[in-house]
Length: 317
Image (cartoon, rainbow, N blue to C red; front, side, top):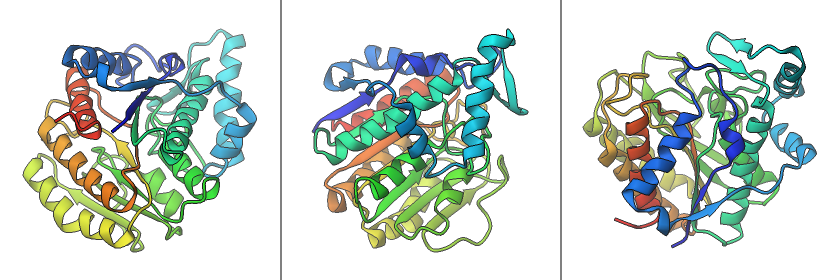
């Protein structure tokens, strides 16, 4: 089994202030933990190719409006001339002069991983990228997110690479409202998720079509609750859908050490969830999985959780 670890230095250039939890240090913490855990040698380290801005704007436009794209581009690039450090998109989402480049690189990385997996170069891949994506809606960035990396990659798999069915698994502590919006009327895409409720962005509890399986859980829920819902809710839906590829919005902020949320998962829970996803992928999708980083803000817990996730992807356990 070949598992790639994709990242790019441009993703560390986007920053929203020294106080902000969605920081470049998140990617460094992951890389440090990969080295200390001694699994780095078993991974295929890759960078996405050089950015083709026009092609990426086309890809992003399959999910986001021209106005949303231009909002990020214009205001990020303007900061290089204005001398200002940041431009606010909402109360907790900011641009700096490198944010456009970083956001393009995050999308490019997710697409490159998707292509490599579909082409059979890799069995699966993890994309250590930022800014994250699953809150970004058609019309606007929000919730630390610029463009919806996973949704764009899934659209690429369908519209460009010709797959007929894909699934998106989201285990971030927050509901992936942008991803849900992108695929509400798209039966080729199954989205399954759990998330703390009530909690930001205060969505995901409304009636949804059969291809959207949201499972809100109360604060302080632990691995026992999550494992049961995966067995009872996620797995029947995934088996019924028979996805040809699985994308993961891999948020690790449901960890018990992460103060961003109030859930109580540990590394073993993330490993178990990944095992269930891999079994479905092996059965229907030739093992094809692309996982993209979303949340996770306690640096040590984030690094350890990504290692647990990667060990399963790479069959190292």
